[in-house]
Image (cartoon, rainbow, N blue to C red; front, side, top):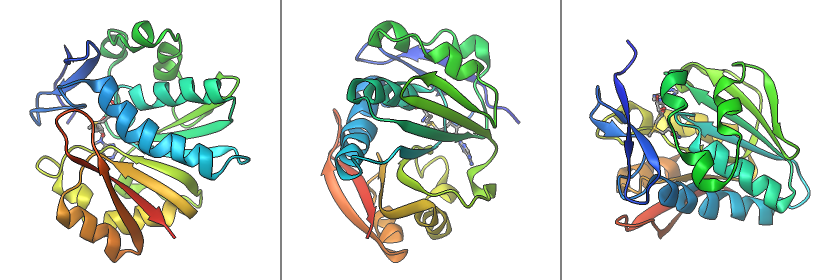
Length: 222
Ligand SMILES: C[S@@+](CC[C@H](N)C(=O)[O-])C[C@H]1O[C@@H](n2cnc3c(N)ncnc32)[C@H](O)[C@@H]1O
């Protein structure tokens, strides 16, 4: 059943979506953009650009949601003039009427969010000269693919709402998706999540988080 959702403001002025069925927002209420910028762009994308300077960067996102992480990444890809192919999976796509309320383009000075949301599922779509997007409709747990990635943005709902998405089998699946040297970043730093990552052979690094969040994680496939 599709969740009941509502677009709400966060403390940095950027919107998020509240999943009223789970009682969880898609981002930190202290600021959606500031959180995504820290967890996925600074800790993930900028590190991957430095580590794989000559490759087209292949990024996988678990939970396309509002498209904020994709939009921030498209912006950085253009700033760095670095080719990115971004593949995002989503089990419960936002209705377009809700997606069109989101204020991210206005805040970032971009105009790509509408085309991201309106792009056909399962097709490669060019969003800007440096950023191609493929949205996959479905459940991550059921994904079958031989594709491999330099970087994963792991943005499932928190373990309190979706414990099944933080279990060892999921991290085995995530680790299999990474290229050698590939990295995964996530906002959840719970110790059993770190342990589940280590148990599938990932090297786990703890880093300072965004506002009101002490630690966030980067896991590396060594
Ligand atoms: C915390 S929100 C983050 C959304 C997105 N990254 C953003 O910045 O807006 C989690 C997202 O994962 C999606 N999701 C939840 N369970 C999923 C599953 N099993 N497979 C794929 N997507 C899922 C939700 O619908 C939601 O869009």
